[in-house]
Length: 324
Image 1 (tube, rainbow, N blue to C red):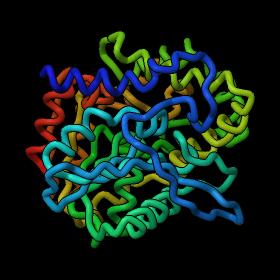
Image 2 (image 1 turned 120 degrees about the horizontal axis):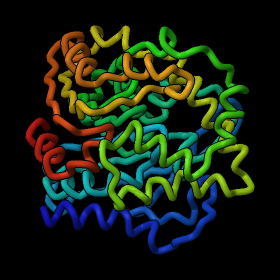
Image 3 (image 1 turned 45 degrees about the vertical axis):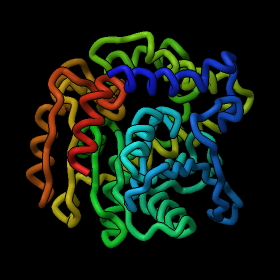
Image 4 (image 1 turned 90 degrees about the horizontal axis):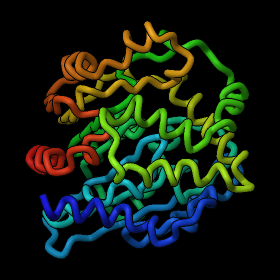
């Protein structure tokens, strides 16, 4: 347990070293736990850069794991998972998806297909032919799309409380990207913390504060309108591009890691209190999803919310390593 807590403290220390209120929208003043590199890409005539960490183990086992972050996060919150995987001999690839973290924030048509292709280009550049893919939250939707597009490159699909286990188009009132942009512009430290507390963590701990600090820090940047617009574009991507109807087409071994106390619903604020209780029930959604995916295994964490690898790091990492 001591080692896991040390890893968590390291994941927090990258931000504590700066302790600034204002963050750039590409997080230049946020220090990640491992060196960050950039892959040059093109999208709709624009030159863009995809940030990533490539952590090579001291005693390699010949296998790799790629980590896909959630919508409200980036590679910085994976530190304890990276350390555990690396110690076990895995090469770990941790991209910040285009539109997130230290990567470029272009105005383009965002799609899970496009992001999956960018990640395949990254693997090709690094000479990695096959890898396990662990996706958390939105990263779970992306990991699923990646496995559907590139099954020959996916040794195992690992989903940590993925969103998209229900079709949000059937639940959430439609909003245009422009309307969502207006909502994103209103983001504040108070609204971020309120959402994280109501959706992500059953009980708030001080070691979660850095997640709010980063999400709120970018709102004070002069470039925040660009960040907000990109966030609205990726919200539309999530809303309009469900993967829930394609789980039965997944052909790679899959493991679902589900915190059953999770209540995450994309667009939750547009629902009535009654509907908020009706949807986003991961205790039910996890079981339903496991039935849809052939060769899948469900691991449930009772009383755990949206981010098991932060809330119960030791138990999550043990389950992860056991099922790799």
